[in-house]
Amino acid sequence: MNIQEFLSYLRNLDVKLWVDSVTTSTPEARLRCNAPKGTLTPDLRAELTQRKAEIIQFLFEENRLKEVRNTIKESLINICFLCGDRNLPLVISPTIDKVNLVIWAEKNQDLIQNNLLNYGAILFRNFNVSGVEEFEQFIKVTSQGELLDYTYRSTPRTQVSGKIYTSTEYPADQSIPLHNENAYSCVWPMKIGFFCVETAEQGGETPIADSRKVFQSLDSTIKDQFIQKKVMYVRNYGELDLSWQNVFQTTNKLEVENYCRQSGIEFEWSSNHLRTRQVCQAVAKHPSTKEMVWFNQAHLFHVSSFKPEIREALLSFYKEDELPRNAYYGDGSPIESSVLDEIREIYQQETVTFSWQEGDILLLDNMLAAHGRMPFVGKRKIVVGMAEPSKF
Image (cartoon, one colour):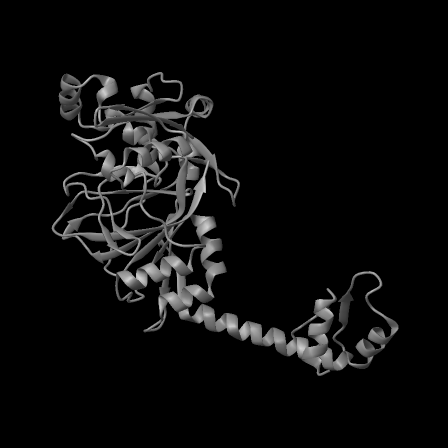
């Protein structure tokens, strides 16, 4: 056997070899060995002794090659923080022209995943992403499994291509509060990516916030209340909100009912009108980092999220349980306005805002980072892809 085959054979036996100092291959370098009991037969020990110098030289060259590869990888990109005093988002950008983001991401998945778990948000900038199809490929190579359909919808969106959708299609003069995608449900995507196709003339930023810091900053009394009771979401479909046909992506009532039963959603029909209730988590533990995060949309669903004049108009026409959407504690009791105001204030304190550049990709760990949208002027096109379903 040549040296490479011999070392491969030893590794298959779970024999670990290393050199005290792999910066030198001189005779003074000491070869170390760790092997399961009984693995090193007298013949193997003799061959190790005989080929010691050859093994040390090979390990030295192998390590030097790894260092060269790492240097090449690192030389292709620059990693920094966008905001000097905030570590959100992390920015990865190329140091040379024509770095293909999809190919680079496929070869550096560990780097991306580790940084995503550390910081919650990565902005990929100046990679000259060619379009929506390349963005979709990027989401695929940085995620496990297929991309997700936008199911059990909360906001109006249009399918762009494959499983890429427009971002929420609310009027340009409205802001969208910070939230974690699908946190009003017991099933959500772990990863969500945004691709800037066209920047607005003014505004249109996608603010983000660290969900761990939101959890840590909230008063313990508020957290305990939500942890104990959870959150109930009540939705009345149609008229002023999305139709049930749009939300469930079907015109078949039986399919809606089956989905609701499987998802723990209470439902009731009144002719063609549908009302649902679902109790979901208020906080969650991240499956990888084991950190606690604030993870619900009570502040967004609650009627107090509307401007006062709109709220008053709605309540003058509808009973509270007939509102398009509302949120309660999980036992059905009302959530205090003061509590929701404090939650919104904490989100505001933790908000980080940056301006989009065309071609930007923002990748979020959907549990670690919340996102929203600022009002804008002119055309704006941000598309979205989601992956890796998780559930409470």
